[in-house]
Image (tube, rainbow, N blue to C red; front, side):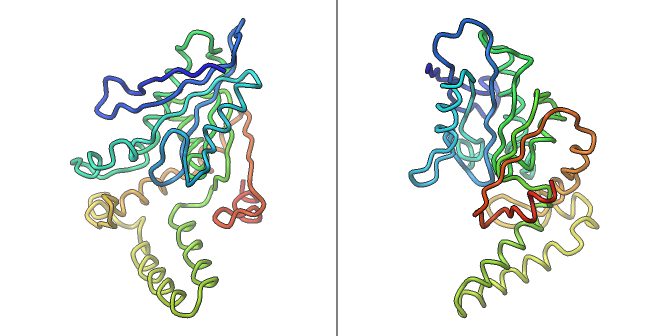
Length: 250
């Protein structure tokens, strides 16, 4: 296995550190994947505690003759700068633009077969995969890990309700109140103008427009026209994304 440091978006406002992982002894162009993070801020390995799923997958794929690129998420590397930006953050700035740059980088890399570049998206990265593909990624195929075709606010509310049900009386009561506030906030979301949604703050630099913008690009609107191969993988014991709900909807 060969690993090369890269800078994704070298000449942009948000350059990102990354790694290109290549199989050893490449004698002909090889297939490759772009890793796309889930929600929240993550480094290139998508590290959570001692878990490094993107690193593990990249190294495992390299042993199978498949190259990959992974990179720090923009909100991880430049979160403060993004919050101070003049325009509200959407998934386009947070995720989509960098995933497209990574696809372009791979396709221009010697030793990579530009006709065999795939996307592996985890959680929100899986949810956004069809849109990333349509907006410029132009992948050979998509691999969705614990993604969902549901709207983001629907997932967020259902997760909060479940946490409230599983919690003790005091914490459950607090969570129920928080969930009710979110329900009120999301009520009529798509009746708001863009400017009205941008004016409603949710903390951390996020506004209601973040949810409105992603919700106005529903997953099914991309999937129903897609003819390229898609692999959908779902953990049976995942308590955030449900096999009998999200996987079933796919």
